[in-house]
Amino acid sequence: MGGLTRRPVARLAAGTAVTAAIGGAAYWRYMSPFSQSLGDFPYRGQTSEKVVALTFDDGPNEPFTSQIADFLAERQIRATFFEVGRAVLNFPEVTRRLAADGHVIGNHGFTHEFTNYLSPRTLEMDVRKGQAALATVGLRPALYRPPWLLRIPALWPVLDRAGLRVVSGEFCHPLEVFQPSATMIANGVLGKVKPGSMIIFHDGFDGHPGNRASTVGAVRIVVDQLVRDGYRFTTVDAMLGVPAYQA
Image (tube, rainbow, N blue to C red; front, side):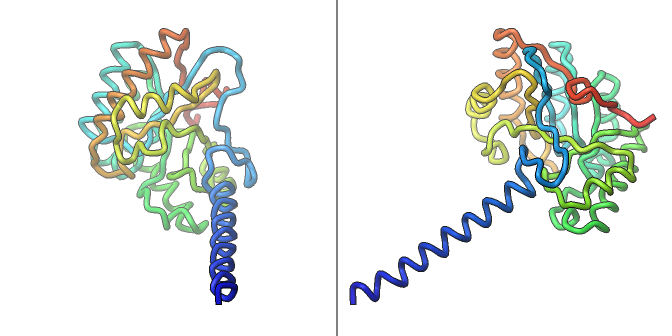
């Protein structure tokens, strides 16, 4: 009986391992910050200089976006904000303030709803609605970062038609969405940063309101430490040598 019992357990374990492997391969192909298997997906700058691009996704989201903007203004640092269209419509004055401060604004879709990024039709509609929302505050971004970094093969033709270029990056901390301590998030960044890094923070929550106090605190810690380490800061377009906005 022992042998008979072990066989189903072994088959279950083998099946679980296969499923995990398939899931891991799918994640790498479609959602990894680093995979280039579907097309060019730049996640860092090619430089040996100690320069970093700070980026922020999912906003604007008050008061946290403005708290980050206030701190960056104190330190005379420009960053890149990939904004969700519906959030821009909720806080247009915040987006205008970011642009006036010299930050670069990119398109991060309109809804930030997962299913809208799975088919070419809904993807294109969402990208264009995001671009239209940003146009209401006088901006025509040339950079697009997919929500969750999710991409399908149709993404590149869709972006070509919209005059956009796709951008990746590296997440600040895998648990940032749950808002652990500012120190934990900051340590995650400082442990991986290198010349050319483009670090992804989140000042919003999928285009919805959400507490991002730990992210605000982490940005302060990261900036202070990187300055002590001799780093300077730039925007994604300058890091990659591409336009920030459409002509």
